[in-house]
Length: 320
Image (cartoon, rainbow, N blue to C red):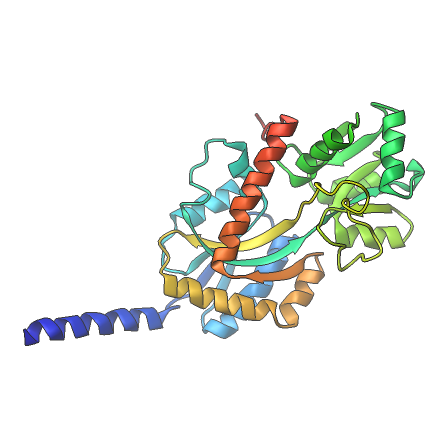
């Protein structure tokens, strides 16, 4: 009996020591997009904080490709010890919503660690379009079916899905012109090659204030912090039209709960500080910390929202 009790005590002590040991080696944050973009900035800002807070180096590992599938599969298959993380975006939801064969389950193969940020898109127009409000843009497109154009980022992007959804909601006939990235799409609208596009709200309002674009509406449930003067789609007569891009941190599904909670606490502390939110704001996103359960609910709701958009628009995933 004494031996049995000692064995239990020893096992409990080992478990406690193991839990307290996290992290025991450098951490890796997988990013599904190339260096220099918003996700990369966010990952590096969080990585620096985590390194200071947890006492271990943090490496940001950019693995672009496959509409975020390459990095996401690596995260799903990584050792579930809390040392490999994935900073993902709404592309995670979109891939799941399309129902295509993925090398992982978008919900079951991951532990949800923390929501990082949210950000609305902004509908902008070239000044030559001659519109100042969303109502004027809709009226002009209806009066000239098939003559107005929209710059998108391909059929698997929130920009494309959102605008296709709005086109059907507002009964518009407009031409989609795909571009390989937000930068080229923004440049096309500023150059007048296309009339309209969705852009990151911070970029849109910056160019609007410079007179190079006209800001028409934002996709959030409330006005954007970077552009409080710009109405929402809801205020412009389309209350159902709400979209928010997001960043969130995931880990492999079997990651110990203690490690998830420690990581969440550190990330939330960073997002409630000043340095990390400022760096997020520099790429046009707002810090929006959340508990693991909040992120899981958010992703499930987001998948359902995009699935509805896909069903309504008949959109097909990129390359299919």
